[in-house]
Structure formats: structure tokens, C-alpha cells
Image (cartoon, rainbow, N blue to C red; front, top):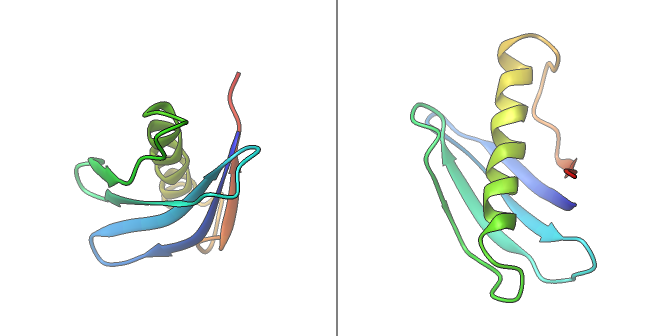
Length: 82
């Protein structure tokens, strides 16, 4: 699980800070809206999986906007997986 905070959508990108569960460290991620490629900082002790899950959370947020499930960008979002 991780938390996306400070989510902001610009013309060509959506970005946020992500905080892994049981951590107080945050890293930044930016996702290109057109290509869905992302650039992110990685928190060394958590590895790249949290970067990918943060990107998935941003992609899901964009899809919810496109399909009318959301009217605006939330400021925070919890991303869970199993």
C-alpha cells in the first residue's frame, strides 16, 4: 500500500509525491499523460515496485477522469494491491 499526496495535473502530465506504507519518506513521480511513461525518485529500501504502483495509481486517476467517475483530481489517493 502507498499514499499519493499533492496530486497535480498539468497540460501534459500528472504528478504526485508517494509515501510507502510504514514509511515517513516521500518520493516524487511524474507521469506523461499521452505516453503513460513515468519518471520517479526511488526510495532505496522499498525498491522499484512502489514507483510502478504509484504510476498505476496516477493512471487509474486519469482513467476515472476520462470516464466520468471523477470530476476533479483528488489531492490524495491510497493505492492498494495484493
